[in-house]
Amino acid sequence: MDQATNIQTAIVRKACKGDAEAKAWLYQQYSKAMFNICLRMTGNRNDAEDILQDAFIIAFHNLKQLKEAVQFGGWLKRIVVNECIRFSKKTVYWAEWEEDKNLHLPVEEPEWWKTVDFNIIHQEIKGLPDGCRQIFNLYVLEDYSHKTIAESLGITESTSKSQYHRARQLLKERIVKKLQIHG
Image 1 (cartoon, rainbow, N blue to C red):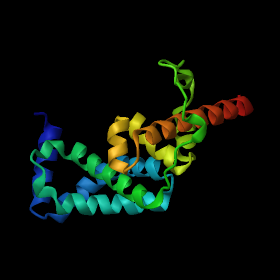
Image 2 (cartoon, helix red, strand yellow):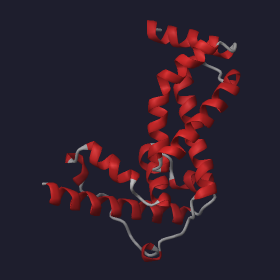
Image 3 (tube, rainbow, N blue to C red):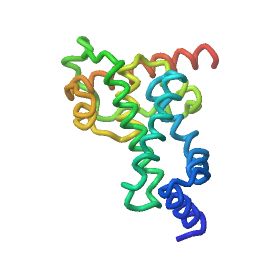
């Protein structure tokens, strides 16, 4: 193991024993990345802050369940994503897009977005309607399958797919429009 991994492992072990400084260090190390996930998933700063706080409380409360201290980051990320899903179950109204019911998506689509500044894409993702944004983030950025998304959110796979398609469509329209205006 390298020195950084050894240090992190030691800090996680201290945090397991209740060490407040170790918990503060872990929070400082991971809070920005985890906040970005929350913000991407909720599209709302206040909700993202609340979810982040809840996720860290859950993580620190259950830290002894973590089998390998070196896996803290991935373990925390799963908690954060699960908290975002839990939040969306209470706040997002899920509906299938009727216009997409019989839609047949192409297998491959030109990757037009690869030349677009990530900040523009990130901003437009945050502006998507709640359901579209949630599905898009889970499918594209968290690598969940539509089946897993459906099971996690209590929706059908076709609702997940239609929300994802709608998100892609909206993102492309908005980004292309923005690039034409500013380009």
